[in-house]
Image 1 (cartoon, rainbow, N blue to C red):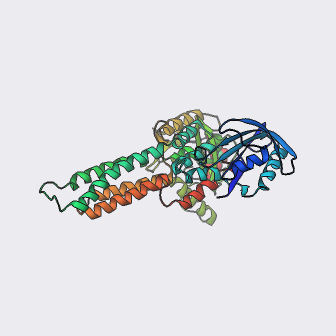
Image 2 (image 1 turned 90 degrees about the horizontal axis):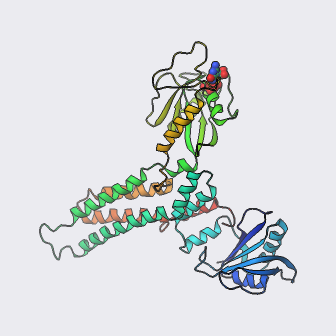
Image 3 (image 1 turned 180 degrees about the vertical axis):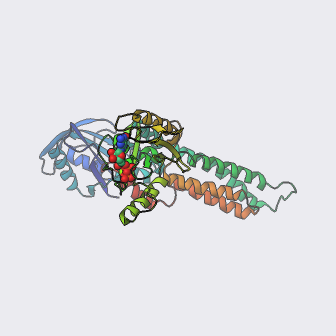
Length: 427
Ligand SMILES: Nc1nc2c(ncn2[C@@H]2O[C@H](COP(=O)(O)OP(=O)(O)OP(=O)(O)O)[C@@H](O)[C@H]2O)c(=O)[nH]1
Ligand SMILES: [Mg+2]
């Protein structure tokens, strides 16, 4: 495998730029530039020179021999002065060496994964950690980067393997000691069902995407209800057009907001007109219905109670408007014009967020992990209904494959491409 290098700290200029080199030619490259290879895991000050002996920079040089390195390969770090020209000159000197090339996005972490330094769920957590903007996002990401999802998957796998071993043994030797009343299958089925329930329980927890991408708050209701006005008030900017004309909003408009320590994704929608002759408004209404169905939390501005299954808050907007009907029980009274009720709405939204977001002390799964957990749970729950030990064993194998996919032990090349494409170069 080629040896790769990249600046792993932020984009220069900065006080320091950390350039990482990983692969079998890493230490030869250090030898070439620094004149020697410093002792393992000790910082050494060296003058780096290019192939012509021209000094490039004075740098701290650190060498981490594989496999005890971040990537599992021989890894060197050059702590350079963080000017653009310095980094560029050292990169050029490295690129001139045989077997070295610039790293692609996420390639260091990808190698760490291939070399077993971390598993797929930990790499996903690391990706989220790099993108985290709120405390809750950081906490959830550090938990999965630290192996919380992996430990769950490993714990389930070891429980599963015990069952699998017992049923395989039964299949191999079942005839030999066939004593009446000694059928192990009922007990195994019970254990498989219990394991399936446990996995399904974790899969049913609030998804980590709500933390990562923001809790999706959708404003819905009839035309002219004051949705866009409230949306702008929540977003604290004029993100959506407001007008007295019914049917002003057509597209759905999304604005991310961080407030009360929560990342929110506010979504404004077209008013749900019952019938419209305007074909564009009709498209807007169709989009609004999709947005409403995808809401984590619906802010409903209709005069009839919200007719949805998910979480919702019922808002009596435009409370100050002349001729406005009186609010009904259970409605939050708001007048954006007078600045009334907005803080109370945020407070209610924050209360709801506490129940809709993954609890801080529990592991939360992303969609990919949840999909495999669900597949494993379903296979286990199916197995618990089967009388044929052969079929039972086959379902356990299916569950095993699904659990392996969570940690990346099985069939995940496409996931790797998608995941590491999102990383920055040098990570
Ligand atoms: N008096 C008063 N008028 C308001 C208030 N909020 C909104 N309005 C007015 O109500 C009208 C409709 O407001 P919008 O926010 O555009 O309503 P909408 O629900 O987004 O409407 P569509 O996009 O057409 O579905 C506008 O003329 C607003 O100025 C309020 O708190 N008080
Ligand atoms: Mg609107």
